[in-house]
Length: 568
Ligand code: ATP
Ligand code: MG
View 1 (cartoon, rainbow, N blue to C red):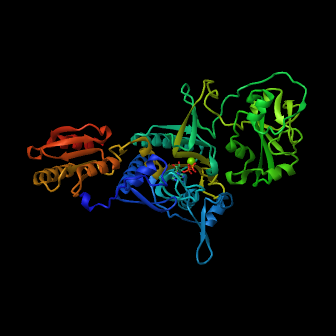
View 2: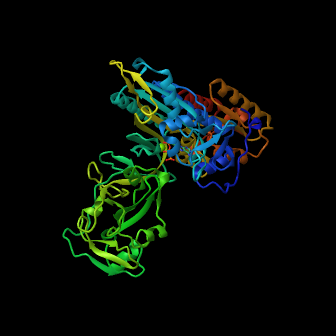
View 3: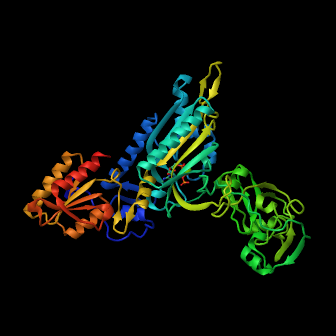
């Protein structure tokens, strides 16, 4: 490709809206462009990377025994009513109607469509197990689209769905996808962890997320180096950490003027925050009830565990307002479980010790020596967020914590969709049995951004060779110089013959400007034709060691590049 013919415009400055390296670099390198928040157009260099990522995923999916199809983004409401999700899926679902007032949505995921296809086409157990997938555009009207391709409203996903006769079959299909995902993310050279995950609005009873490790990740992962336990904090468990008294004292109401926060209360009463308890009141719009969740003063509520315990949805749970708290007979900042007549969800750590400090539901008052069982009761469970330093629920060693980007997730759906949607096969007894399903997603565009997060430096992107938009670039210092131009063209032709994807920078520009462009874009190899061109000597640079330049024979540079491309 000749640089002069490319649609290429790099930016010197960081666009204001971009906050993280991948977003900044994708815009600066001229790989993507957008007009609307969370919706992106892929320019030539960005599209080449995207296609390579898709092809690696495709290759591994095909090798796993799955077959590719392609569905429309448009899905009819009726199918979503069959699965029960039309009313449960919140404002993230983009809904619209046609001229005949028939309602549709733009698919945020495709469980309903794949289930419908298989129920119509597959009747016999002879065709099971089956795994079908697509690489296709998804739509989610995210509350806060941000970080470029990380969280967009339109994005590309690889989604696969497996159909088995029974649970045993599903376990095999699930493990097959787990192994395939491990191979895929290894091929991208990503540092990642597969962690236990919550199943969210997709449903089902087991799930793993594949997390690319990165400080810009939106997920917190806790893990144990000793036994290998790893989970998203939303899903993570930890052993209860017991702090406090073992014998019961007398319940006592004390004046705590204007002391609302845990810090204020602990300081005022001269106690450790672990002796206090937070009482947080929520309203659950799905079950139409108020709930109080109790966790120790130093802990945070794990809302996902609360949502699961209440069998409600993320969109239906919200904090109660100060007015609502008043109507419940309490006071914001002084809430406590004693005398509060709503459902209580009590974290186990609160129940394992005596004499805790709780709000008295009265302005400026708290109780000392409250004891679970004697002074209040509720549904006991795990409602806190696990954090680094907690003890591993499996082996008891201290857990560590890191941030990750969710690049993929796999779920055991079981019969969550096949049952209500009647996706069945005929068994040997001639009965109709629901197929047992799994679903498996990879965020293709989010993976692209994650690779940049892990592979960049001050100068720009450092693409791994197998996803780089081009493998190499040939840069004559002065294109108008005949010797340089001739050598550059020879090298360019030779590399092309060897199957190397190469750019010839034939632009009439200063050499420094050209070098900066290719370093920003992240082309793995650069061959510079300068004053030694008449002797067939070039300067050779690898993007990963941007400071190192080597003077070598053109033929040697061609060999190095051609051989590494052959090995891909
Ligand atoms: P998140 O929790 O980050 O919103 P999710 O769990 O809702 O993601 P899934 O339904 O598991 O996402 O979708 C499969 C994959 O699609 C995710 O693992 C992620 O890589 C990608 N993905 C999901 N939402 C987005 C988005 N808004 N922009 C880009 N990629 C996304
Ligand atoms: Mg997910």
